[in-house]
Image 1 (tube, rainbow, N blue to C red):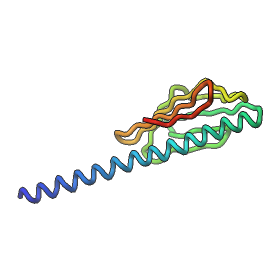
Image 2: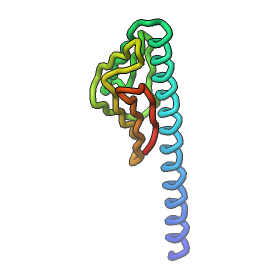
Image 3: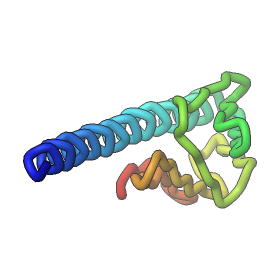
Length: 122
């Protein structure tokens, strides 16, 4: 009976480790994709001389950047400090702070209001 319990606990521990590692990897991938989309939007604003709009829909877990929609993966949630940001032709904006989450994992994606720099981190 003790051997069966030990095997059960070992399998459970390995399963939890595998699933939590998958959540972190998924968030890193989503964060990198989002950061690339924000950087591309800033370059479009700079090169075209026109503003670019970014809309965040927390409930639908998607972003619309200059008319293109980016959908987050399954069970990846997002919370934002604002739902609408306009990137100016100068590269500046009101800034944006997003928190992506999946399970117990969290990842921040930030768009600096002055420099337009995009940072991804915990």
